[in-house]
Picture: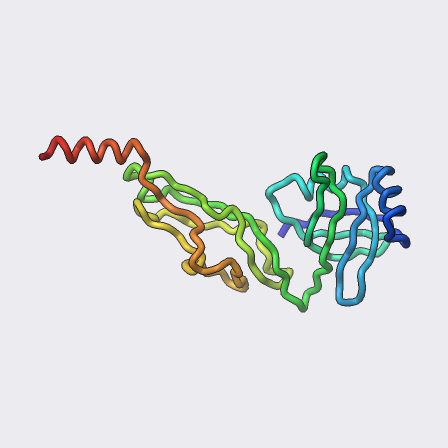
Length: 194
């Protein structure tokens, strides 16, 4: 998994007044959650853009006043009207504990159903999974070459080494559907053969 480095400033005060002051200075209040206790800090809003406004998932190396923590993005809160980042929660990651995270899905290959006139549809853009830090993938790549017309690829059909997929097994990840043009051509062919 790709690593993104962030630098934060520890903040001793976590009240409303301190938080408003931090936001006025162009910083975002953040919390690093861990079993050892929470660490309150702030990060410049500009530094968070590569993390927030991207479809990619990153393992983070957060430097808070000289101490570096491995973490992942747990949750983010936004202003209802302005869409400004209000608060971010991070989760500390260790080598001995599995992490739950959503990872983007990519499809590869030319499906048989598409060759037959269908359309390939990606239904699930991200899948939730659990794995140790060292096995976390940047992206889950799925081969769809064998998908026929009307067929679908479900979560229960996926197998990855060292990764447990938490998304329900009956969820459809990708499917090949019949297009309207193909349906029309089939209907026209059926009427001419009668």
